[in-house]
Length: 460
Image (cartoon, rainbow, N blue to C red; front, side, top):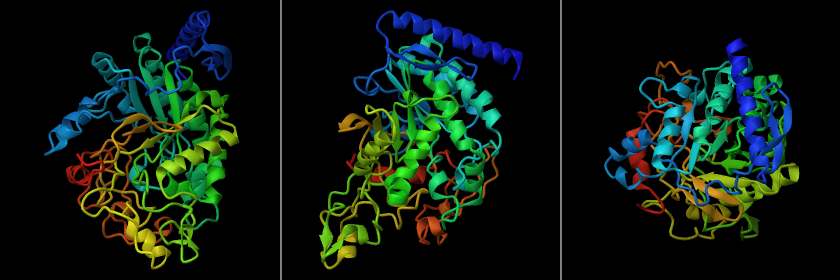
């Protein structure tokens, strides 16, 4: 580490300590905070923190995404919606090419008079070990670069006093920790890349470090990615995933105090509510859980999963006040094919198939799904235990390329984004259901955006 960087971290630590002292004298709550040298002090005031950062706060609208949405036919209907700002590589902090950097977004949020801004922390070493489309720039062993070149600069910028009145929601490392449970070892869904990340511990260390350093900034609210019900909703994944998340939160000198909540369904398509059947229904003496679609999952939709997983997280050791976010940017599943009622009760499969809103071929399908639509608009406090419905994944940004494209972002070609692909163990060997002619992940995909507009529910 350079002397300049060391001085920078010490200055940041001194600033936070001084701010904590001031706030503590006015009734702040004492919490653990990083001292910038791997340890913690015990007097960082969280007077500025509220139970729900979305409540009563005007959300930041990303002008870059908004302009792209507004340029699409019909896109002006949603161009004013708040979406996540993805920091998916080191260059994104300063701004890659002509894109806005982190300070640009924060300054714009202040200019808008926004009360809350949503950031995606997304650059773990060995990212994403189960999906080539979202591979990152850092190799499996590059934990040092992740900490000093990625997390530290972000934390330093967020600690700038000029942003102190912004509530900064950080959604931390999408599609990471659950992989250590579902895609490792002897499971048929295992990948060699995920086995490496479990063995070297760099997912756990990276997330722990991010939570600690970002959580040291008094106006930051950390929400850890919690997959979705079609990933960790089964008995053998449910509690085990919560345990891995607890391990990450308490490693690297961290604490559960650095976790404000969890976010589910980011960049995914799982329906928010399946109104035509419940997990407790039976048909002909057979439980809905026995149907091919549900396949013994504990939940049938994302709301019930988020609420039950919240209970599991609390029982695992997280604070009882944690809140959940659900990404509803692409899980509306509306349009002319949306079922109007339950399916026929011929048997449990016809009942579920005829009534389900989520029209994917398999819950494991995740790339640019045909037939998907915009879901519930971003809303604060919509249900018990849910801090907000959010659009962390900006609608219209591709999940991955439908064929190989050379790029300088480390993103590979994943056959799950190829509409001709017939599947693998992670999607039950079903066709991918992906749209054709997609660009690499994060790039604008007009055809997908139009699909989302057409099938929006609630309708536009």
